[in-house]
Image (cartoon, rainbow, N blue to C red; front, top):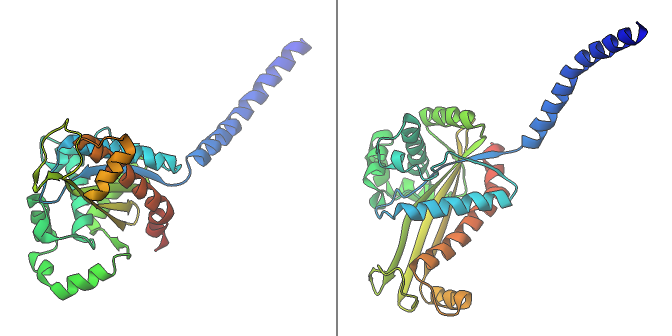
Length: 276
C-alpha cells in the first residue's frame, strides 16, 4: 500500500514538473534561434539587360552558402530567384509583393539609374515616385553622394515586408539586383560554352543588394562592380592553368561577389538597419 502511494506521489510530482521543463526547453530553443534571420527574397535583374535564370539560381545558392559561413541564419522560399514574381508569370500574390518590395528599395536607393532600368521597374518608378523626380539632376547627385545612408521603404511596402518576414520567421529580407552580367568577345556577346580561350573575352558583373529590416522598413544598400578583361585572363590561367569557359568565368566572379556581400552584411548591413 505504501509503495502504491509513493508511485502516485511521484507521478503527481512529475506532472507538476513537466510544464516547467517545457518552458525551459522552449527558452533554450529560442536562445539558439536568437539573432538575425535573413530571408532571401529575390535574386533578379531589373536592369535593361536580362540574364538567363540559371545565372540567378547559381548566384542565389552561393549567396545562401556564404551567409551561412558567417553564422547567419538564412531562410529561402525554394525559388530564391522569384522568377514568377519578376516576370508576372502566374505567380502568387506573395511573389508579386516580393518583386514590388525589391523595386521599391531600388527606386528609392542611391544606385538607381532610370535610363538603364527594365521596363517593369520604370513603370513602378513612374507610378510610385514620379518621373519628374529622376530628371532633377542636382537632387539625384546630392542623394548619390550620401550613398552610405540608410533609407526607408514606402509605408505600403514596409507593411508587406513585415507580413512576409513574419510568415517565415525572419527579421530581415535580402534582395539582389544583378542588373548587368555580361560576357563578350571582341564587342559581341560570347556564345560558346566550351571554348576555354580567355584572351579577348571581357566580363562585366554589376549588381546592387538591399537588406531590409522587416519591422522598420529601413534599407541598407550595397553595390559591387567587376569589369575584367586582362585581369580575368590572368585569373583564369592561375585558377585552371589553361583559361576558363563562360560558365567558369561567371562562377568564379559570383563566388567572389557572394563572399563580399556576406561579409558586408555581417560586418555593416545588419548593424546599419538596426541603428536608427
